[in-house]
Each structure stands twice: as structure tokens, then as C-alpha cells.
Amino acid sequence: MLTDPEWRRQGRGELQCVVIDSAHGPAAYALYRLTSVFERGVQSGSVSVVEALGDSPAATGAIWRYLLDVDWMARVKASLLPVDHPLLLLLAEPRRLNVSLRDGLWVRLVDVGAGLSSRGFAARDPVVVELTDAFCSWNAGRWRVSEAGAERTDAQPELRCDVSSLASAYLGGFSWAELARGLRVAELRSGAIARADALFQSDRAPWCPEIF
Image (cartoon, one colour):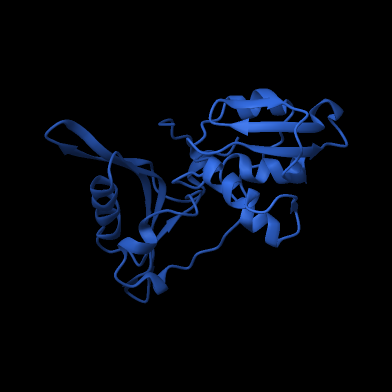
């Protein structure tokens, strides 16, 4: 979003862009604003990061190195970052991060069969989930979830939960083990929780970079 109307600035500077090039072309970019403020002759301004993305861990580190090195700025502010952003481990003093965590992505599976079948799964043993859904009753029942997707089944259930718990695991935001510890899923067959976690595994936390 490169348009820069005054209402978006909210008292901050105009939108600026920086691109890091590699031998293969652009590798990272950042959109940011500078707010210059002096208090008793001391700079107390800030860098407001709108977006900062890289196509590799090295490029991501480089673009944040640039943002943290902007001169005459007391702090860097960023929002809408993923909960597993590498910045925590990139910093020499991660304690100086003033991090707050808020919910920002909500999932409601209206069509469980289509939703699960559209998601990628690891090549692991299938698991049978008995699902309840008080609002979308067509989702209720037993579902066999496997690498190939999801299908109705009459097999004995191994896990039991409601649709909201399934939605929590759908994008990988919570593991089945975490849901079980929070009493949101019942394990009806020993080992089913571990198999479900292996099946639903994801190497990144779910993230939506835009407010919609």
C-alpha cells in the first residue's frame, strides 16, 4: 500500500521505502516513517515500521539492521508482527523489546470438509476426530484426517472436540497438546494427540500482516 494520504500518517513523517538488493535482485524491503522529536536538545523520535520483509533469514536480518541503525532515533516501533518473528533472536539484548501480544487472526470453519481438505498435512498416520458444532450442524460428526485431506467416517473416534478447538489447530496457532492441556480436546485413544500434532505440524505460526 504505497499511497500516503495525510490521515494515514497520524502526525508521523511521510512514507519512506528502502530496498536491499542481492546478486539475484531485490531481497528485502521496508516501508517506514520517521518522527523527529527533540526534548531539551535530545532526540526522542522514532522509526515507525509499516512493513519489513525479506526473502531469507539473512535478508530479514539485514533489513532490520537498517531500521535499527537509522540515526537520530530513540526507538523503533512496529506492529502486526508474527508471534514467532526472528527479531527476538536477532537482537543482542532481546530484553529491550517491549512486546505486547494481542489476538489478530480469527478462524471459523464453516465447511470443515472443504477447509481441512484445502490444508496441507504432513505424511503421518491419520486421526479420527469427533466434532461438535452447535451453529453449523452439518460439520458435526466423525472426520478422518490424513495427508490426503478429510472425509466422513464411521470409525471409532480418537479425539473429541468442538469446531472452535479445531479452528485453533487449523492454521497451527495452537498444538493439539496445548488444547488438551486446556481441556479443549479429549483424547479417546492413547497417542492420538501426538499423532494429530505430527499431522498438523507447521514450521511457522499463522500470521495476517494486514488489518482487514
